Image (cartoon, rainbow, N blue to C red):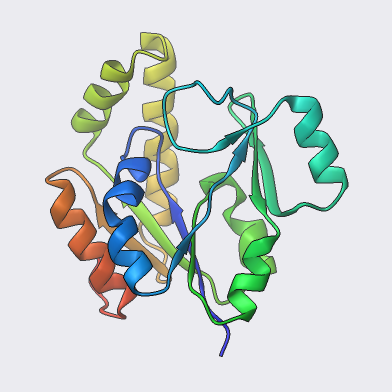
Length: 187
């Protein structure tokens, strides 16, 4: 039996990386693989434990067909290694940190996709973005506005599981695991 692709999406600052780090041991116990993305951000940049490559290296990898999924957003390029297809074929569930903007294309390639939308209260999200110190206030305001537009469209989709990460991370991990176990209420 083929595994399922679990596509975690949410705004920058919603805690996707923190959730993945906290859930990693429990997901591994279930045989679920968490994918390490390839990003054109330096390896020293604060954030997820991604493989940092130069734009030229990314373009070469993309041209070679090294990615099952790839997209460009916020001045960066992101790739999901092709090996996920082997893992899925072997029956493993595979969790990727995806892109809301690339969701439609991903659904075409993986029709049995399980979409988990990590949400967070706007005030909490603003605090997290400010604390990161990566962006100007104007950039943060633009991110928050963009998030509100995305969330509005996705939160009512019947095949998208909402997972609120405004509170304790441990509670979010528990809700994620229940969601993956097939319980209908992720939020």
